[in-house]
Amino acid sequence: MTSIASVSGTTEDAWEKVARVGFAVSGLLHLLIGVLAFQLAFGDSGESADQSGALSAVAEQPFGAAVLWISVVGFVALGAWQLAKAVHVGHTRSESSTGDRLKAVGRAVVYLALAVAAFGWATGGGSSSKNQTQGLTSDLLKMPGGQLLVGAIGVAVVAVGVYHVVKGWREKFLEDLKGLPRGQAGRGTRWAGKIGYVAKGVALAVVGGLFVVAAVQHDASEASGLDGAMHTLKESPAGPVLLALVAVGLMAFGVYCFVRARYGRL
Image (tube, rainbow, N blue to C red; front, side, top):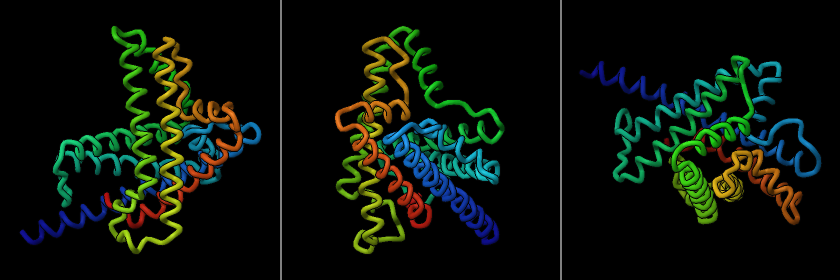
């Protein structure tokens, strides 16, 4: 029995370490998206200011293919870990409420979607996230009740954005760092998380708003994902400055993700 328990513990430890790679890769992608958004703010970025643009930038590097494959493994492990949390399998921290389980499932969907996107770029079949979003929205709008469904998705994404802003402003993200008690987190970590979560929340709220517009106007082209949100911010009053602030915030979120890769509570 002891031997079996030992093997089980070793397997779980290895799984956790691989899952933490997912946080590190997420940090890299947010840094790249922030850079692309900053370039867009004061010019015209050659890549989409979203995850597809970031993955494309990675793919163009000398060791890009290796990084993409590592990304696939890390995101799959992180997504699987979140699913395990949702069903109380292979995890020591009990998730007691339905809300906790739903959040774990939501995170799992996001990470597994990133794994699929990274796999596409790793195998040479990467595509624009904007086009994928618009294609999916178009399909949904053709369904009975499609406008309501797309609108509901938009409202849900806006709610997630507001949640990120509140979590960042109140520094609730520090509770996710198991190895750094709230009072011991460095000033850099606190500011990176705070600015990062607020900026990401703003970006997500705009993404959700575009889904609502697509639903109201019955026009899938309005649902243009994160890249569309970045362009919308740029076209707003004081747009370049606002977009630059969000871009810096996304880069800060990337830095926080690296800290979370080391100290984060899975």
